[in-house]
Length: 155
Image (tube, rainbow, N blue to C red; front, side, top):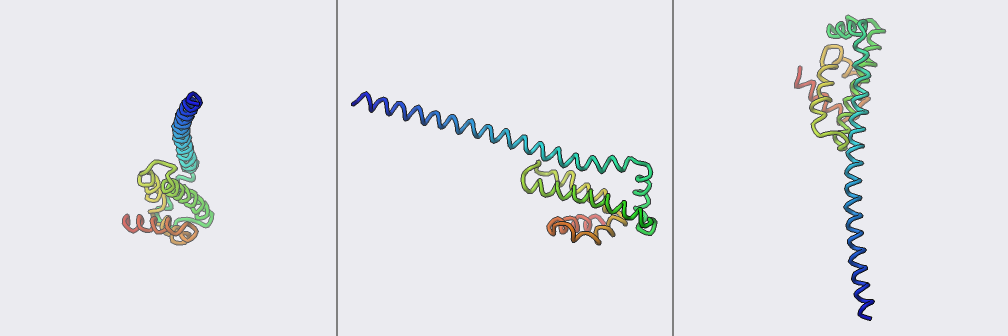
């Protein structure tokens, strides 16, 4: 009977050790997968931004951006539409950076480094501010308030 009791204790101890090793291993795997997912989110966000940057390399579009700084009166209807699509793409990219940082998918501080810079670079001019006032309600309210604050501080 004593042998059976010792065997049971040894088996329980070994099983508990195996469970502990399994939990540690699982924790390490989850940590590694979280890092991979976070990296993937960062890559997706910045790939989205790169697409818009490539568009601005086109000379005709670059000229449109320069004219937009003079205000909407310097733009015809087609140019205003093109610019609106461009602004919209950039602001949704900024929103994604904001949301992904809040959700912990990308590094803390990325909104401050990249998202805020997008707002300042792309919609702080005359045409951009006008566009924002017309379309701000199509964005999530908390993001719109944040953008409004950035624009108010950087007049």
